[in-house]
Length: 449
Image 1: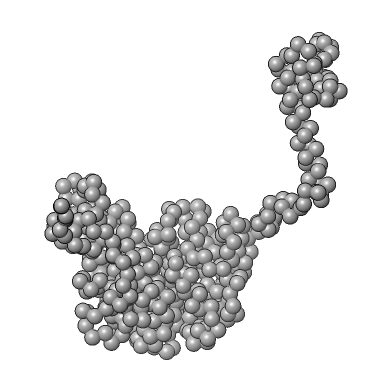
Image 2: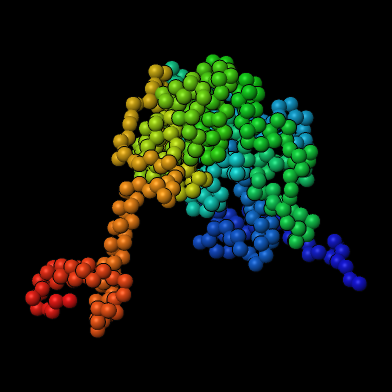
């Protein structure tokens, strides 16, 4: 009898998280290119083995992440480990970055990226492809914010907090948090092992087990610890974190503690319907100092809906509670939204910051009236023995049209006798034939049917 030992399984390949060792380099345009052919970007399909390719991709992404992280540090954003007070990097933690002099800032911008992305990354397809590292990450966003003013009376740059709702799966062997996708690409026992399940006791981070907890921790623990009480807060939320932010703020108790500190809120690609919001204070704030961006083919920053919503073809069944703008035709997937709309978002935040009395312009987009969709088919709730006159008329018209079609078919076939046209009203046949001849202008040239 034969059996396979664990030691007999094919070994997993080893890749170092270093661009040079992986045969890549960064060119003058800040793009990652392949050493052996500089015209090419990252090459995923190295073999036909998916696990092998994933191992290489994991090492490559980790190398890119390290470069992005070092650039954020060079921009003056220091590393902070959550939960606050964690003893060492060996313990479960999630890393965020914030301005070193945050406590002295009169304005602070908090950015929540997608929960599916690695820390500091907006889109790997841009960071490691066309566009380059800075464009596909938070680096360009941070650089632009550092050139802004905190307010009309404060010329210093605003403070920045980069939240990290993505890297919340603790990897004990690597001593770091990973995204939901990266966790399945970490080194395993063999080439044929696949994926990693979530063990709460082993892979969770205290008070930051999921994006909802992380968001709450940022607002309730990080902000009070590092931001001064008089500072105003701007929030940028992307994708699923837009809904998380709005759901968190749509609470009377939360709004009473945090609402007075908010200066502006931008949601990008969210689906939270403000028409169903419960907190009146939050609804009023969104109406006056909120802005939404959604995917749309109109040019960037085109106004496409008012606070109450718009055409279902544009905004679906969602009313964002604030002016809604297009992110432009190039942002065709969520991870590209802030890459494409970042300039417009930051420009608006600066406009709000410089005007303490800012209130959104009153806008209303008019659309043709749309029929209410009650979710039912016509006559769905009518009994067969109690049909309406309208449905009867439709059936009669359908029956009449059926007869007309039968006549045309029989006429084209040129039957020898009328008796062959069984089931057809002879008088109707004669009448239809006569009308068609008159319409053709040759009623006298053919014989009477």
